[in-house]
Image (cartoon, rainbow, N blue to C red; front, top):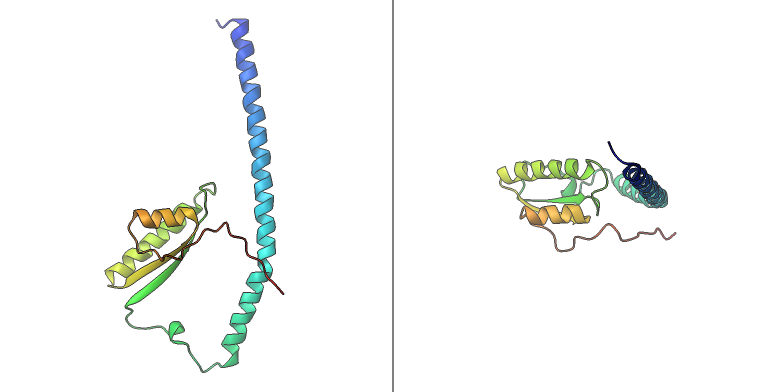
Length: 149
């Protein structure tokens, strides 16, 4: 049977673990709030981008840009891969990277050259590990974007 000193040490250990867990939870909640706030601030940027694209599309409806026309065969393709910088998002990175890997395989089997632009450290690292052709201008998602009116 455990002595009283061992029981007290175990209780103190559990209490310390509880304090650490509570602190980690508070830090995670703070980071989530900041991420949500950045998302709210990015909405006007997305809205403006959609408005510009809609305006351009409606400006001359009979004109079709060559990039937007579906072709029978393609020689080259580009993929924009957006992942997180850290792996603290459940299965998001795994699912995105699985989809991109399948698409790379499909395009490779069709004889299409594929170049990947990776935004986020997880995606960039993964693409480099599988020896995909990564665009040298790939960037980190940590850069802050602002919309100037």
